[in-house]
Image (tube, rainbow, N blue to C red; front, side, top):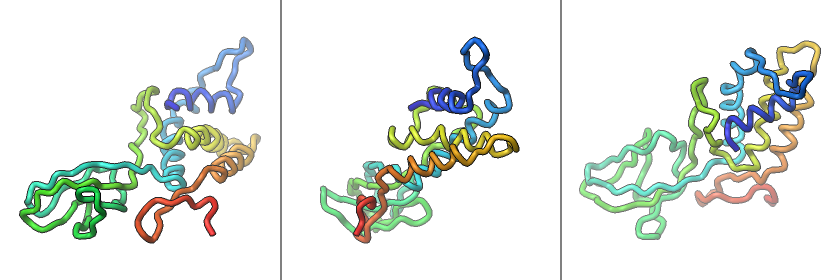
Length: 183
């Protein structure tokens, strides 16, 4: 789902239609939309982490900077075999000087920040099922200051939809595991 599609869904939820059936533009709602979608995507990424992999070729210096989106590395592989001889400290991969190995790093990513300047073509980084929950969060945020309309219905729908998504967490072995049917 794109940011523009999400905005359209929020406007539909808020019933922002003119008498002719066209969606009307409310500047107050529009100005807050990107920031609310940023909050929603970050909340959803805590529930259902964004898992990515990157390949790093070490230059032998003893430390390599990692991409800014790396929140936590949970698995490092060298030649397809899991290794623990490497450490991540303050966004850098630390290793013995002279090592020029190629490593595959599996990590939890932080989603990109959605700013007021973010284009409507931006594709949410969470799964499609998770992205379908975001408009309910945003609609609730839009209604919080409204003393007449209760935001709780949209927020509760968001929580219910989010709760129905499979939740992934890191297992003690460092891998991602399904936590919905955890015993």
